[in-house]
Image (cartoon, rainbow, N blue to C red; front, side):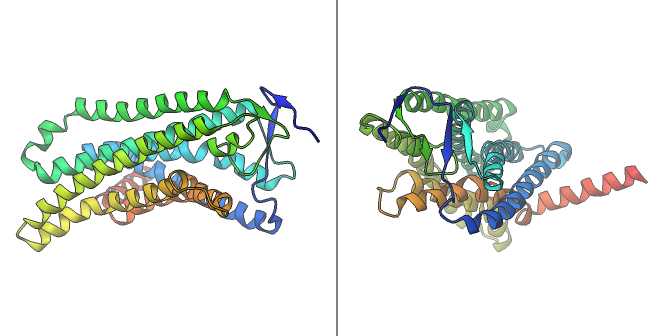
Length: 313
C-alpha cells in the first residue's frame, strides 16, 4: 500500500509490546504498582518538606521541586501506557500525542537543569558553610527553580515545534509505547537529518553541560570533605550528597544512553527499555532513595504520622 502524506493524522497506533503479548499483563501489574509507589512516595516528600519546619531549607525546597516534577513526568506517560496495555487497540489521539511529547521533553529538560541546581546547593553548603544562608537566599532559590522550569519548557516548545512541522506518512504506527521525537521522525516523508542533528545538539546541551557542572561541583565537594578532620564529619558530609549522586547517576546514565549513543540493530528495543527506566523506574526510585538514605526525612515523616494520630485521638 502506498503511504499517504498526511499533515495532521487523527491518531497514532502504538506497537509497544505487541510482539510479546504474554508480557502485557505482567507489565501492567508492574507499571501500575510502580506508578502508585511514585505517586505516594513523591507526595510524602512534598507534604513532609512543606509541613515540617526543620525541613524549610534550600535543599528540601529543591527536593520538593524534583518530587513535583517526577509526579508530572510519570503522569504524562504511565496512565496512557496502562490503558494501552489493558486494551486490544493501542492508540493515542494526535492531540494526546502532542501533549505527551511536549510534557515529556519539557519535564526531562527541567530535571536536567534542576539536578545541576541541586548540586550547586550542595557545593555551597559544604564548601561555603558560613555563607550558605546568605548565598542561598529565598530569592535565589526561587530564581533557580523558576529558571529550571522555564528553561525546560522553552526547550520543549522549540523541539516540539520542529518535530511536529515535519510531514508524516501513513500508516501512523509508532514502534514505541509513548510519543517521542525519534519514534515520530521515523514516520517522516522527508529527510530528517537536520532534525536528528538538532535533537543531538539539544541532548548534548541539556545532558552533558549540566552533568559537567555537577562533576565540577562534586570535585570541589570531595576536596572539601577530605579536608575535614573527623570521620563523623566526613560521613555526614558525604551522606547529604550520596542520595543526590545516586539520583544523578540513574537519570543521566539512562538519558545519555538513550539520546547520545549511535544507532545500532538493537537500538529499537534498547530505546524502549531505556525509556521505561527513564520515565517510570527512576521517578519511582527517587523518593525511595531520598527517604531511605536521609535520616532527616525519615524523622520528619515519623513526626508527621505522630501528629496525625494525635489529632485523631
